[in-house]
Amino acid sequence: MTTSPAVPAFATRDPAMPDFWSERFEKRFMPWDRAGVPEQLMQFVAAAPVPLSTLVPGCGAGHEVGFLAESGWPVQGIDFSASAVGAAQAALGHLAAHVVQADFFTHTPPQRLQLIYERAFLCALPPMTWPKVIGRYGLLLPPGALLAGYFFFDSTAKGPPFGADPQQLDALLSQQFERIDDQPVADSVAAFAGRERWQVWRRLPNKFSTREITIA
Ligand SMILES: C[S@@+](CC[C@H](N)C(=O)[O-])C[C@H]1O[C@@H](n2cnc3c(N)ncnc32)[C@H](O)[C@@H]1O
Figure 1: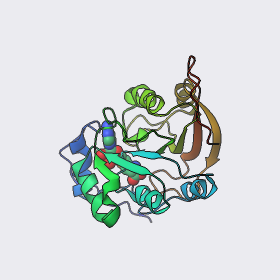
Figure 2: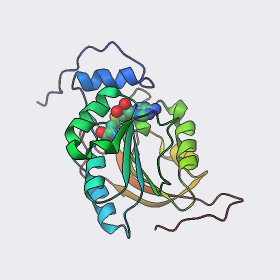
Figure 3: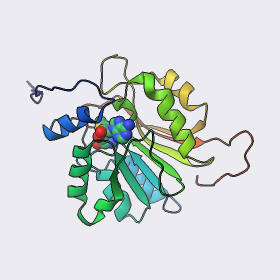
Figure 4: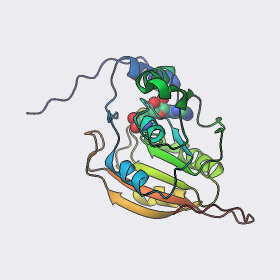
């Protein structure tokens, strides 16, 4: 018989608030945390023609931020939870400056982005906020830039994690992006196993803009 880890009692219930996440980091209840770098991100970095200027929204403990920084990529991780940022900065040591406390909805990255890396950020937020999240992805990424990472698909309404319906997520993303990769994931944590996919989306040109960057 398998036993799930005991779930502590929580005082916070709203995942749109930083305190919700801070409480979970402080109580060390982080079933999403991979404690390492997932395989398809490593392959993506190995295959990239050049290091990409990257934002990691809701970076949590910052494993991928450290990996990207060590790979020579200009990367910034942001998280609005002070406890998450504290944990990430402590783990990252000399790379701690790559993580800052900031709200994704108001943060302006210090440099022009070529990539947003997504893992357990979209699914951490209620689906009613997804048009706003995806709209901001589109605002922060110039045409040709990439949105790559792990997307969680599930039909239960309860969350987090909030699972996406594949058609609904496609419809939302396709307004500004075209999908250029879509793969099953073999190294998921238990919370996402069998229900997440690695996907890469390329920002479509703006209707009236000629400024486009070439990556993939
Ligand atoms: C489920 S955790 C995932 C953490 C990390 N991406 C990972 O894969 O381990 C979601 C994270 O998103 C952060 N977050 C949620 N809403 C945010 C917002 N509006 N701005 C910045 N961070 C946010 C939370 O504080 C939390 O650390």
